[in-house]
Amino acid sequence: MLNIVIFGAPGSGKGTQSERIVAKYGINHISTGDVLRAEIKNGTELGKTAKGYIDQGQLLPDNFIVDMLASTLDGLKDSKGVIFDGFPRTIAQAEALKKMLAERNQSVSIMLDLEVPEDELMTRLLLRGQQSGRADDNEETIRKRLTVYHSQTAPLIDWYKQEELYCHINGLGELERITGDICEAIDKVK
Ligand code: ADP
Image 1 (cartoon, rainbow, N blue to C red):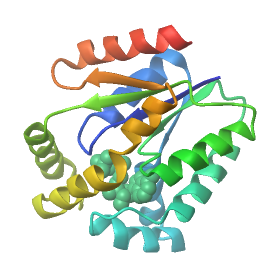
Image 2: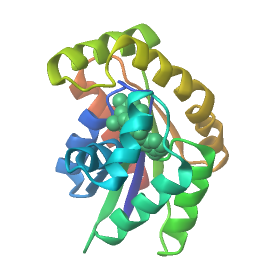
Image 3: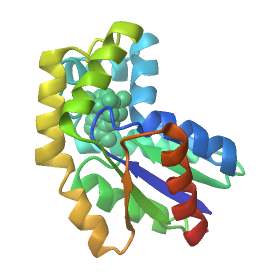
């Protein structure tokens, strides 16, 4: 089982690189952001709650996300592994993921930290906002999300270093080069 955590600030390219990894390794992709946006689109109760947080650039409560992730994980059949995109985003979530996988006799294989300078993140997200119309890709909400990233999510870097699962990836530059660096790192732990 290959369980990959793809990590990085909003706009660091987690979604784009996840698609490429899924195509190459045949594993499942769980993007908490995509799951939440689907709930919003379908007008579910979960979606209604989620929308308030997302539009404010805030994280959803940990228990909410952890329950959602557990049921998504249980829905997978004959999986060769998973790439977790947008999860964990807090230390509590990382601990919950560790426990959840241990209960299934599994563990995280590697954590890939896609690092991209802040001005580039802003440029990418503003462009995405214009192209996709994602409501949280406006300047004010992006700034809030980056602040939330630094205060609540970035501490996971040290957490995964302690777990000896951390792998830095330079997320600035050619898409192909970045994918190449990621695959090289995955192949070492596979
Ligand atoms: P990005 O990485 O561009 O910020 P995502 O699509 O991963 O976008 O997430 C969008 C929003 O969904 C987040 O700003 C947050 O409100 C919510 N969200 C996604 N994943 C989580 C999570 N693991 N914990 C709490 N909230 C989350």
